Amino acid sequence: MISHPSSSILHPRRILVRGTNWLGDAVMTTPALLRLREKFSETHITLLTPDKLSELWKNHPAVNEIISFTQDESVFAVANKLRAGKFDLALVLPNSPRSAIETWLAGIPQRIGYARPWRNFFLTQTVAPCSGAVKMQKRSVAEIKKLISPLPAPRSPLPAASHQLYDYLHLVAVLGTNPEPLAPQLVVTPDEIEAAKKKFGLSEITQPIFGLNPGAEYGPAKRWPIERFIAAAIEIRQRTNCVWLIFGGKGDRELAERIAAGIHPSSSILHVQNLTGQTSLRELMSLLKLCRVLLTNDTGPMHVAAALGTPVIVPFGSTSPELTGPGLPGDARHQLLKSDAVCSPCFLRECPIDFRCMNGISVKQVVEAVLEF
Image (tube, rainbow, N blue to C red; front, side):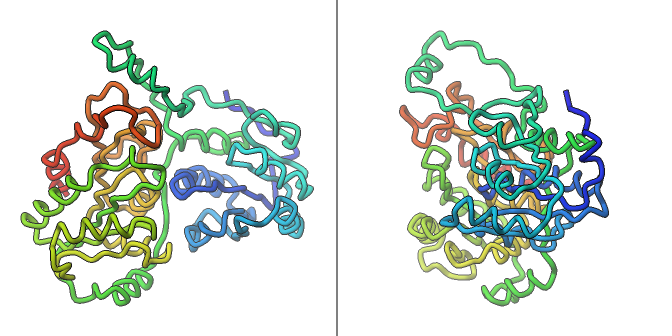
């Protein structure tokens, strides 16, 4: 049940939203922020975000101002930044103790967040989880072996509103906002897209541009096998004459080079361009918007692409599309592929058995899903 707002927080003049720390999570908060803007159209809304994510929010309609902090800044340094804002109210989206302490030290009079041990003291209003909330809990090796035994334990379907974006909508609804979901939304301008095309030599390309995002920072259990990415990309290129753009962070460079060489040994820009570690966040957003479709693992860029309106094709293994899939749950533009592995999702970084969840997703399935777009 959603709590009704107290009279002291019905008409805040200045709201601080303490944003999440990871790219995919940040994108999943955008429906809640848009509902907050809808409810408080004249209120000044400031987002506190890690420096690495600050570019994500440029031109976003839900926020007026960004305050960023670096990884090495203390909780006291962040609180000092916030005091000057003279905020009436803080919405704390992360569940960490630190995020609540920041707003308490800043002296913000109303502080709202989910009830969690070790931090409730620092909030003026705690909120119970929504009824459909599902905790992402890692399975033990013993649990996995039991699931794959000849007599596996029965599995219950996830609630309809189990997706993580509902958690943020539920929290913001304490202020009287509309709890109905919206699709995650990000913004890039035509000028940004043209600048990215020019910088990376894409202005003269007339073939369809497809994106490939083969990494996953969390660990190898989230990565569809390299050989299958290569085989799918080759077949798709043969059937569409597309240009592949390979995305990823600096740590994905070696992986991306292997895939680029596998797609086209001469690494011709006519067929594949490896952009891993070369783009800023805004440039990545612009290029993802440019792509007709993105073939990707379950990663932050997957969420970014979907929020920019680019269809995504995602092999899911150790994680759950029902909980953290891209876009609005049920959006038919996106193809979220799963095998019939009974041990999935396990939420582990590495598979302790035979990687059947990802090995059960074939090249043919992925190719057919991409070619629908």
